[in-house]
Length: 471
Image (tube, rainbow, N blue to C red):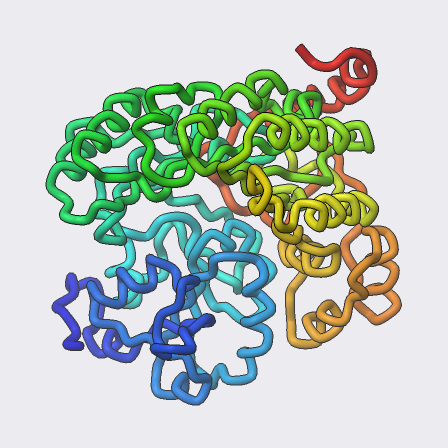
């Protein structure tokens, strides 16, 4: 692939000696897998940057770019670190880099936020941009770059219908990291009308928050096309949308009970949840429900409410499909949940695994319900601490031996006994806590985040939470 002409911000020689490193090459093609970040594919094609996936290939390049998609990849980087040669620059980007201090031990720089408009300058050698975290100066403020939604898509079948989120769910980074933007309706309509594929991606944190989505839904139906990436906040989903839907429907439910959803500022009543899933099932739409467990205040009663929802749907439908994915809550940087001390309930995971076992084969006799295995305690904890401490090869070697069924205090003790210690703030978070990501300034920052966390604490102590079911 020939290198294209770059804007003259720096030398072309430097650009020619840059590469992307793929942490997840496809076993079949040796180049891309389902986990290859779209940004890597996009920038590789646009600027003629090779993608390598063998450590032995790295020595030929002056600059190595990484597009990280999760905190789990910090451990992949630790295993790869021995192959960094003297004088070589490593630069990380991607969603995991809103907390860059943990990879500053090996990365020279981390790009914070979007880099659509900035990538050519980074490739040409510019390191003075506002979104560039410099590991030599970890305390220096760096600003999250939140680019305009009108930029070209990074995948040919996708278009961003909205960025950010107008809601204020306490656990979610979308409303706190981005300002909310919507692509003008005319551009989305033109994309749907002209795109040759029948399955297209209208990217949005929640489609039903987009002011014109009901019109988009009708247009998709008229054109015989389907939004393959649609998610929904539940409340505004309609019978008409279900009738027009040609592929799975994803609902972000989050809490397994009504009171937990109230706590995290996602007030979906049990009656409303059942109503929206009913709409899907009676219109033949497959449903994916995304839940969290280990939310603040969670106990056995919350699981019992979830179990009653499962029983309700199984009693009403003899066909159809519902998948229920449980993600253990991981307190997120730059949100009101950053003050929540991480917890993992091994007994709750066991209950969910019991539910999973009871549903195996349910589609042979009635409504097919499926619950994938939730992430276990040790792998979850490895992700959590990757925001807090440097994941060096020595640390990674210890963390990856963590026993699989310990709760958080026991995991902390186990690591400390082997020389891996977490900072005191990990378990003691106050209004004055200086987080490892404190140098990152996001455009969605809100001075009320701490107050919103205190508001959640007040809800947790209220009679409404401990008595009557939230209305």
